Image (tube, rainbow, N blue to C red; front, side, top):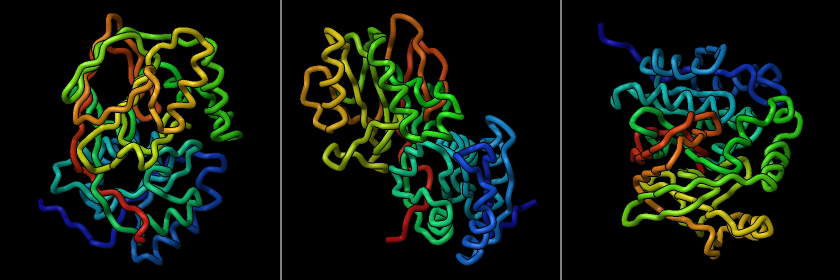
Length: 306
């Protein structure tokens, strides 16, 4: 039986546990805003981890547009579900950020106000974005990383995230400066190889990640150029160097011998021992070898129509 798609139908996937106040205070206004933009929204809720992926994969093909309402993890799960569909059946994607860090919302220029974000979701324009493939198995929307600070997003207690937002991530990151761990690894990228001890590596397609690191236009970041931005931080000789290194990274200068910014379509990282990774702020497991490949523009995501 052929599928029937009504051009003004959308699927709205809601994570009821995301954010400080949740969806209850704004859902009616969000629905009315989507209605004013000409959409009929079917609402479904997640009950736990992996539900957004399942819902997007199972029902996404029957809608013109899928909207996820939650945090960065909800967006990542929804993208993973859509990537399971054939390209010709893949709907457009919109995002109403309700999380505490909302790195993806910052990258996409989306409002933190759910009603304003709903207007973008309903009346915005689609742009193509790249998606990361991790070890030929998992997808990530904005970052795969290991080392210092990568545990901050998923180890920071939810009640602290809800109460303090960005400050909770910053406090968690600063608490790790006194206890830096490092890993020897070999990093292969387009046109080169880097080896040595590193405290941090991020393979990213975003302007902000790890809750507080931001890349501006001077770094050449693009969401649809088929390239990752790769941030590497070598192990400092002593703890006193950690502050200046982080200042270098946060200033987007990458001028010290300890901080590097690369651009590459693929990245392979090999370790001497299994090392923990995060994918879009969630636990990505431990791996002795990791390969990240940039999938060029498989998703159309809705942004402000400016």
